[in-house]
Length: 317
Image: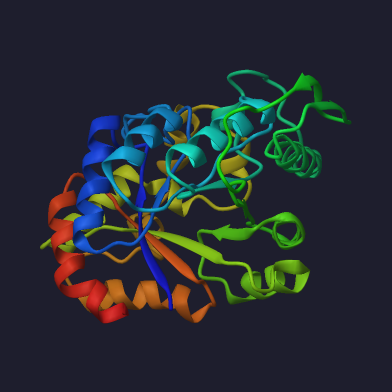
């Protein structure tokens, strides 16, 4: 049976509001939480970017829902030893309700520490080494590591959960999807791509969960919802590798000026018709995803939760 969760956006909302939304999501019948991990928002218009680990600590006490990062980059801005420390503590705090979603990241967030942004092939190497290192630390043993990308000197995690947190791996292309199948405890994607899910399973992901996420915008006026998406998430219409390579929100604003409203909205259910929202979610279910997470774009959060509780979730269950 498919799990339906809510996707918390650290790019749009401050920490108190994210905690409030998580509680509202649980009351509305959502069964799990995703939360983004950013240093910068994509655009200044989005306006926020709280430190995800502080927010998750509050979420752990505010709700009983499982929580996953979607996704953390354990490569440059934050060393994998520090991510392992944070993930182990979070998993212990939540009683095993935490899963660590990881990926190769974006220059937007990572360049703040190192201006050189490695090419994808190198970042995939770094991610593989980081995952192995974090899992070694999750054992609670003393770890010394001399790898190609990371060095660790006699590190040990003392605060550990009963079971290591699962590591979910984001995959947008063939190489990262293959790595997710080979090394991940699950797969994360933001496209309803059945071929990608199949590739993940064929690469070693059989029996592991595939998690998909999408953005929506509920409003009683469909035209207003479309304008909200175009204002806050025109980056959905940016194609190719730019999202991984550009370092500043203003660069995305420059690209966004060329994105039409139709391009920004494509793939996002908008407006007041529950069938439109249900059909967008069902695309992920039909593609083979075991869990589907929805994010409401904009300020109409309470209206969204009421709408989904009454009209959308009953359609997709």
